Image 1 (cartoon, rainbow, N blue to C red):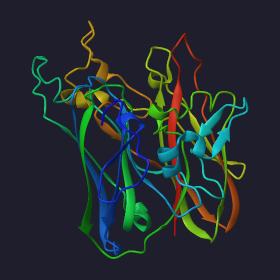
Image 2 (cartoon, rainbow, N blue to C red; image 1 turned 180 degrees about the vertical axis):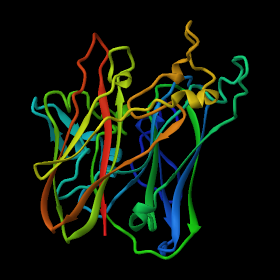
Image 3 (cartoon, rainbow, N blue to C red; image 1 turned 90 degrees about the vertical axis):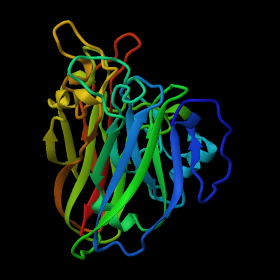
Length: 342
């Protein structure tokens, strides 16, 4: 995965890894087992730097294609071919929320690359032996009903580096007791996977506003929950990366959750970050606490209980007090939400 001038993909080819958005997105149609009800399913991504020294946002995702429109339309033809969402200031965001005719990408795993593992292992810091790669692994059995047959699987790392990153993805199946696959309804993802093809940053999306998504379910859902991933960005002292912000989630007008995504364990992963900048006080950049993520780790989902939902129309809102811009720097939040239930 890198950032280069590459030929534009105009046709989908099976059995081939396709590159989009200047090489920052890899996409491939893979054939997965049709019967996966007796398995625990995991995504496992091996990653190392080929030249990028910095911590970057990454996402492993699948693209649903059972609606009139899909995210593939945007990849092939440009962001203008994706459904538009408008905030209260009429700023538009492409392909981020469910509509009657469109399902957004389903985020299997959010990960954050380390500072330069492998590519910068020549940097010497006392008492550290850098590994050759970082392994990101997460269970995704919740999505078993979508991980069967032919599936478009993608990986994205936001970067502007010619040599970029090396990745290897496996979807692994481990035998377990047979269970009924859950119902899955993708709702939203503000992760701008097509960033390098002009897809908007969600920097104004929550400013004095909320993300509001209207959706319909065709049948009743029991014991439902939102599988919610949230990370804050804005990498300066006053930015949301380094300042805790409460996330509030509302369903049909009722507040169902309020929590603050915040990771204080980032120092546990110092050995994965050879290019992390060191400060005079003894800390390193990768040690610093962050809004829901750490360099070299997976950002785990939070399960937000919604209980039983009747078939029909519903509305979900997410409110986050995003920080104000400073000069050319901006804060924004990458969130994704999927309704899962029986």
